[in-house]
Length: 88
Image (tube, rainbow, N blue to C red; front, side):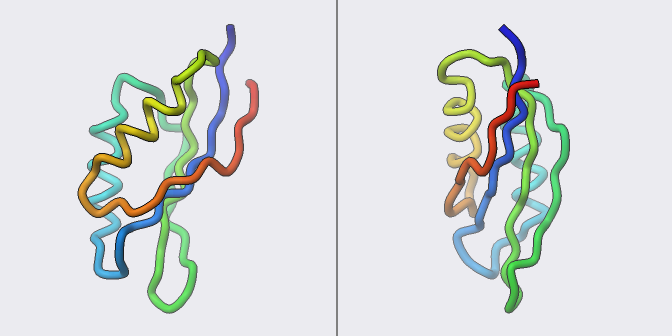
């Protein structure tokens, strides 16, 4: 089995959420589950931002779910969606 590059969109619960704090917690929570390829803050507009996260995980059943569950347990995270999955 190979690896997959996964792009996740992480939305905060509200506009007052500390994006930097969420980013730091994401890094801590997913350590050992995957490797981070890239993490960016993206402006939506009107002060809203989300985190665009590119990770590399093993191409095994349930790996992406484990990462998403780990991220969703973070205080301040509202919604997570998978935007893209590519075999690498």
